[in-house]
Image (tube, rainbow over all chains, first blue to last red; front, top):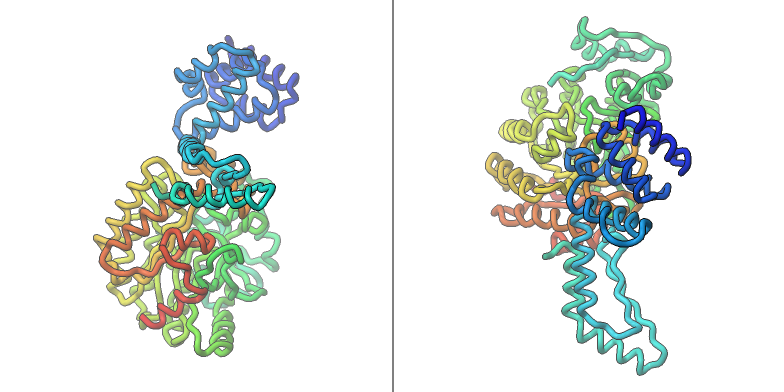
Length: 178
Length: 364
């Protein structure tokens, strides 16, 4: 596809989706392979406005951090797999955005998964909730108890007591200990 | 180190001050000198400049400061453990250009590089401070809204400051810098009252983000020289940036530091994680669109700043703290702009009350 044709189609998509002017400018400012590849994916997956904005922001940040181009990122095998996977077009679009977010925050995602697994392994009774800080933005772990009777409450406290070591380990992980 | 400036503006009433005389002499014929009635308009951003903040750095203004010179550190907040640092604002803005610098937001409406011709008036404020609390010891720094030494070869301010502080037992002066501009310091006897601190970053951060600064190795070498000349030295690992291999690089940096300077000769160290308000992040990314250090794993923290997500940030703090703990001498250390609970996690103790660093400097 010729450069002028790509630009025309990007402008058409931006117009249809009411893409913010700043993001249109950033899209058009990309190198030719990158803007063409992003256009192709946008059209194939019928990305919505918010998804296009997220894709442009996230891809740009990954490209800067890894000193690569957006075209190279979108041609990676795991991205290709997502694009070709089974499932509806909206589901594949959501999967792509999620995958880009994971690429943007690989260590955060890995730590979130690890902590979530540690908490799941506690097998705490219904009524006790262990909540991690949003995006691990602090070191504060929230444990809440929803009890309906004194006996209920005592049972839950006992459950927490029996898991104290494992819970403290979660808190230590939040504080950067391995 | 020679920084480029396009022009020097001297406000009416300042031309005959010692500071202006020195600067004009140092600039000689290299930089045009313009005499003006009122500097306020020139201090504002140039609306026609492609990068108004960057353009401001190249416009030096010599003017009178009409507000107090001495203030509490602007980083202080009830949310954070405080080191008791007092700031003496003798200049505003900095000829160097670090991509993460908070001045890009803090001085966005006032970006010209201003040097205050009446800076010795600050000595009266300091004397009043001493009189108000004669039993206390204060750590006072000039490196918050400007680099303490970046233009010292032109302004010669350091000599006046050292002369004043060397006769005040209750004060320690801290020059904070990313330069190796120490010539004036070597010509003056600090009598134990002056500390020079360097912000230290890894080579990767220096190359990517710290434009027009001295390389980290040059900063460490300069520290060794001023130490031998009778100054105290300290180091700020701030901002710590959690890029790939950061942990390894920071440990190597500390090793290089400790190979050059014995730990017992380090007055203190501080650490701070990269932190950016949304406004700062926007302007920083606009001015340095290709800096990978600005695209790390930062998330919105409870204080409204983007920070490296907590376990990763604390891991980096702890690694550095441990390296210093194992170096054979107890070096006082604190975290900048972190809550007391984080301090406790990293150092294993609650943070000392404010001003403790100043008091330790007095007794050591």
